[in-house]
View 1 (cartoon, helix red, strand yellow):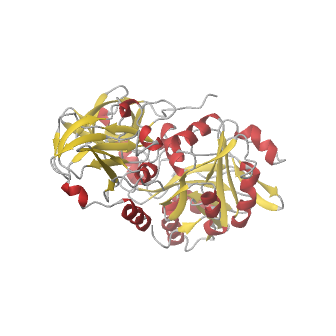
View 2 (cartoon, rainbow over the protein chains, first blue to last red):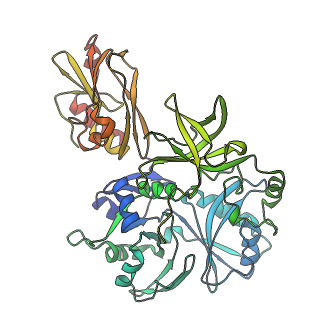
View 3 (cartoon, rainbow over the protein chains, first blue to last red):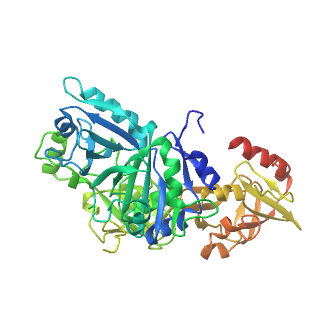
Length: 366
Length: 128
């Protein structure tokens, strides 16, 4: 562990709750509390709270924010509505993905939530492109905290905690209000494949907020439980959601990563030109889902074969707690990426049979 | 942290217990906790002969894959077949129910160079 690792305001609280801590993106974060599989299933069936304060939180102010962000984001943000959040990528000139992030339009400013691992890179990227525009960028990560409250029981339980009607709020909308006299932003979004909220509050306030959700050690909440980054990862894999450093990297573009839905090639943005070319030529590689035979897990960079031919590599994999099957995402040569195609993955020197399946692996019942 | 005093430990977090000239081995509770929920154990075949330092198999968890290395050479005479259906036995009880293989060693000499419980405890504390 590096001595410079950052701690969220909940670090001591997590330790007291028996969390196993790991360093992630330069932060000491809980990887698990009761156990990854148990927390995973609890999130799919009830309600879990994740400390995601390591995520980068940037605030942009100034008259040019909309055009500035629209030039750097793959998503079309022209006419973005107040109270709405937009999932987008930022890319390099050559189309390589710098990060995936959520851009939110507030009344008088804009917010970005980016990956913890990319916080400094994105902040520098914004600064680099800001000269000549009326945009001021402030990194609020260290002065705020962020929780994700996720699971099918989240929305009904929210009524116990706040007076504001969050039930009628649609996905990718957010509200800003006061709770116990403190400002709180609540977003209807998440990274688990379940319904739920993501919450940003002043850093010092989160220690008061957490017991409102989880209860106390003597009187724990009967339904809401803490969960760690381990479960967050297995949940997002089942939900087919990309993770920066795995499905998303500077080595390839948003279309190749299967995220074309957040790319508007009809507008101009940094990285648009190479993506237009790729689109016109046809993508040589595609991100697919794989379902493996047996219980072995395919990890990032494991090679994928069709017969003797290497056709791609795994980006993420896990043993799906919900499906009880070994699943993976992989970047595969297009001609081998059609659904139901039979491939093989090399695991521990042996070939394991896999077939191409539709993403996501799991979709919550509507 | 649970570290039984009746056996020896490697720096790669395996334990070795000598009983009646047979060496039983597994991974430590610390290693199992670090791996988190174990989902699969790749076991060697009974009858395989192994050399000290060889990889015997792998332990996989939702989080990571870890090699199982033997500190003694010899013949694999038994594997814990219960792990095929219940790999979580290692998480639940790494030092007893979660044993991995039994080896008839050519020599138990290499075990003398391994850590005892007290040393292993200190080793983990410093590593952490």
